[in-house]
Amino acid sequence: MHPEVFIMELAPRSCPVPLLLLLLLLLGLSTGAVISQPKEKSNEVWGYLTVRKDAHMFWWLYYAASSYKNFTELPLIMWLQGGPGGSSTGFGNFEEIGPLDRNLQPRKTTWLQSASLLFVDNPVGAGFSYVDKADAYAKDLATVTSDMMFLLKVFFDDHKEFQNIPFYIFSESYGGKMAAGIALELQKAIQQRAIQCNFAGVALGDAWISPINSVLSWGPFLYSVSLLDDQGLAEVSQAAEEVLDALNKGLYQKATRLWEKTEMVIQQNTDEVNFYNILTKNSSMSAVASRLGFTQIHLVHLFQRHVRRLQQDPLSQLMNGPIRKKLRIIPDVCTWGGQASFVFLNMEGDFMKPVVSIVDELLEAGVNVTVYNGQLDLIVDTMGQESWMRELKWKELPKFNQLKWKPLHSDPKSSETSAFVKSYKNLAFYWILRAGHMVPSDQPETALKMMRLVTQQE
Image 1 (spheres, rainbow, N blue to C red):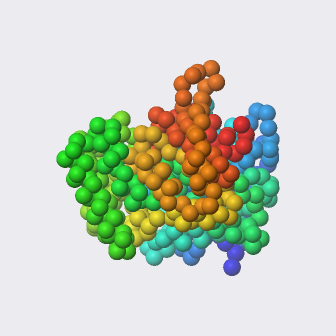
Image 2: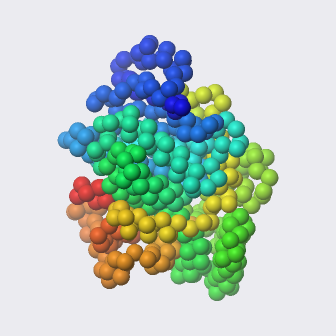
Image 3: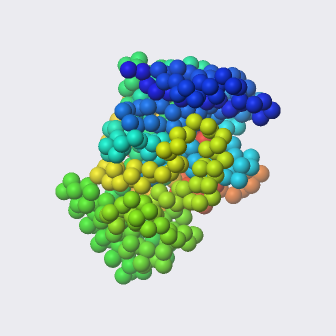
């Protein structure tokens, strides 16, 4: 059975969209046919792919826009957002690394100057991706990975110009957990010749690789920066131990609920610290349970704090207004971000499961793995990242640990240190200074430099 595919290419601004293209879209072609093949000077293509029955995934590709190199000389980067339920085509694109910001103004630090960018709204239900029936939401990492393998297979078959170009997966937050699973399966698919692409590495940004390592480090981290006193530290540490106990018993849904309880203890003791940048105040969340479609109050709090922030009103208005009008293929039944709460709800049982073993498998398989983290992030603090990395069984880890880190300077004319980096063979770690959870938003120049280093352009 052929996948259902809708693809559209951005017409030059000076020309109307060809009538034939519109007719093809209205006819709703399926059978995997490419409606419009990209030309070298055309810089955007997007479309839908039915990855499973009743599950439709939206993707958006930008061809690299370098003034000195053709896109064939630059890598392809797929960006995966967190949540789960956050939108890559929305938040990652317009708030972090895409060619335009949410005011549709050119972004000086867009990654597009050094790479082609593929944004994918995953899991199904995130962003412009959607499901027809409630049982089509992904409930675990295995389904998320399987859906993405289906998409990547079709993508590289239909876009043969990218088959030999170095392909990297960059990610953020829960997107990092998904990226690890996807990277491992992609590596296997390439070895089995099921997918033809030049997979060059995965980058895990402020990634939810081992949730318990983050939770256990929250108290000590906040205490070390004077955001908890002795009593607060004791309360947070006790709540964190309850999460650990639930995980040790394999009670993953209970662990998610206790994780939310630990966050509430932190909020009460820190005067509402922002989990995504400890130097800023937490933004208020006014949505109510009935609007989100939840019955479990703990999931309401979690969704508000960790997904809804990715689709605040200005971005939502942009995506459901001008962008929806531009894309032309978004069905009436789909609202950008409209199913995000259900994505989060369905992944509750998978949320607290670690994937450290998957990172180990990637390293042992020779896949290039980059871990990067913002200094001011709490939800996935650097202490927690360093903690799970110490648990890796990778045989080269002792040599990695023995290395001294090196400073990075985003501005060659400045002596200000923007990051530290340690790299050995196929593992690298970047400590990004003065950045929170969204590294490209907080330190765009440093993020761009890191991307160029990871993709071997510097």
